[in-house]
Image (tube, rainbow, N blue to C red):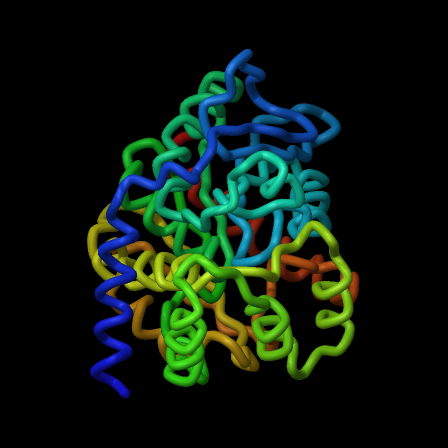
Length: 317
């Protein structure tokens, strides 16, 4: 069984390296930093601005697998109230508009490429503000690999549960293999299984996640292989983060990502300025924060705000 699984992963990996003509070019958002007449790619923006338009710092937030940037709404509003500008970045292949626009292929690696344009546009709009990348789960991996590529242009990195190793990972790999026998591009409902595992101890989270029609639940074996290949690039990227301040957060009650794998990833970070914050929560700590108590939201936002402020002062911004 392992042999056949390895063959499948290798085969799907080759497909992932080929040009993907199914990835259409699109850009739709509630507020875009720029509105070109011919959109160039599949990244989009939603923004939360501080009322006084201060320049305390800018956060670019990348959402997790299956979600959209709307999952950051509660945290973003709280950070905006503390003087930060927050932008949610869409990962290629996710969002309620993806099917209509043709951006259906899961492509976090393409989103890393998109981040160059995102960062450049933010620098033009906020020339004096330090830029921080923030991401959770797959979004954490996307932020991590973006930080490694554009580390000269950012002031820091905030990650939550970004590690690749998951509970029941071998069983899920076997499931992908079985579904691939019906065709590597044939979609099936992997999202519901993800929701059940990630929110096994939180019925409110499961209900919210499941009922949000903007979230995506149908994926192909090729999508999932591309996702895993991307996640496997975390450790090399972490080793190259010299000079980038990193705050890593991990819920010790996480039932999806193995907390120890986050610790191991933390040890591999090449920056001397790195902090690991272990907290008594499950998988989603930064997204869907409206399900937490107001006190917990304030504590998490306060910790992030304090950490950012200290790094902003260090960089002289």
